Amino acid sequence: VTAGLLYGLRGSLRDEVEQEVALADLVFAQLIGRLSSFSDSAYILQEPAEFTGAVAEMEATFFQRQILGSLVHSSFLPTTTPERILVAARTGIELETVNHMPGVPGTLALSWMRGKPVFFLNLVTLVLTVAGILYAAQQFAHPALKDSGMLLLLYPLTSGVSYEFSNVLFVLVSVLGVSWLARRMGSEA
Image (tube, rainbow, N blue to C red):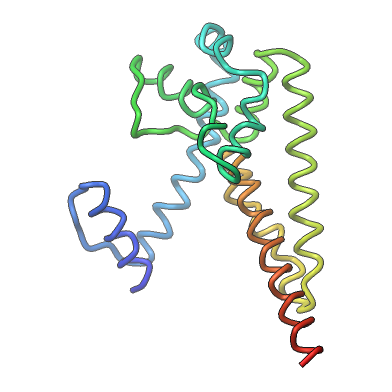
């Protein structure tokens, strides 16, 4: 019920037509949406010539700038991203309100097309962020939460968008920090 209310709120904010959707349908729709990144990755790998012009416009640090734009300030956000390139390649026009997820393979393929140094910089950033998420999840005291890192990585791994990785890491570190602070304050009282 709560998920339906949240999607209803999102729909009203986006001026979408409101309709009743069952929870199972919401979960199924989200799963299908996540799986679409695999076909987007395949499209990038099968049709690299369609992306050469747009890839040249991408900043070499687009992956890192997305992280900074999410965590620090929107002024860091790059203007050209793999998500925007994919929309333009598929539709022929630049749509501001629509993104396609290239997935990790698609993002890395576009990085490779941009240049080998860009690919390796993004690969190292990706590996460090994933390792940070897995390490942070292991710091939880409750055994059931120790494996939460893998579950939390499902969404960003299918999208391939760097700020989704950094947001998961930021939330985990924040929760750990607040927990540590609460324990510290509790032991001093």
